[in-house]
Image (cartoon, rainbow, N blue to C red; front, side, top):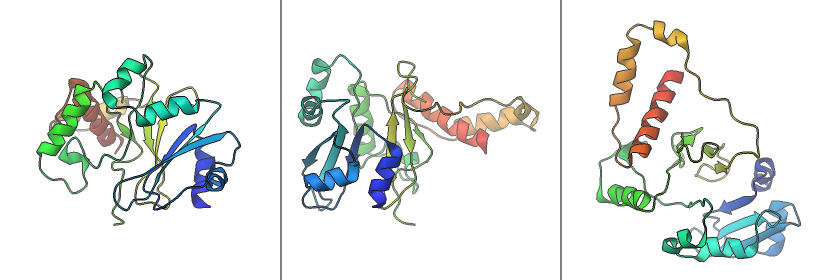
Length: 223
């Protein structure tokens, strides 16, 4: 019931539920979650004990053929199939820098490989709004896509934070970040900005590093 209420509130066109802990999915279960006759779906086997991955979508917005191609096709062929922008998502269990983990850590070959994969396939790592981390143990994009935002929602039943990818034009626009002139009157304001800017180091494309730097600076200014 909690998941059903959350899905109704989000009103998304495509929904992916990972780590469902379920061994099987039925049509009745999907319809009870979605609450609409326009739903189509696909159940994928996942490695380990996480259960089936459930992908649901509104057939008024996309067809089963398009979704199957998106789910099953190899990444190296995606660019040849679609000239339109596309999105790659999943629970990668990897980060692009130790700063993306609450416990910190050191730079590793895994981090470097993940960043190289993103840069090598010309992907854009969208900055996350609304949260610092997407998982709990229980204890600004490229100019080409100015309206695309990735936001974290309130965690419900899972130990993961739900993420919403908004491609623009479907919801009211969020309040933009604005620089306050009164901040200039704060003692040693320029020094504070410089210290925040130099406090973190990121590895990746220039656009990625710049986006992450601005994300941290924005957070510090709001505080």
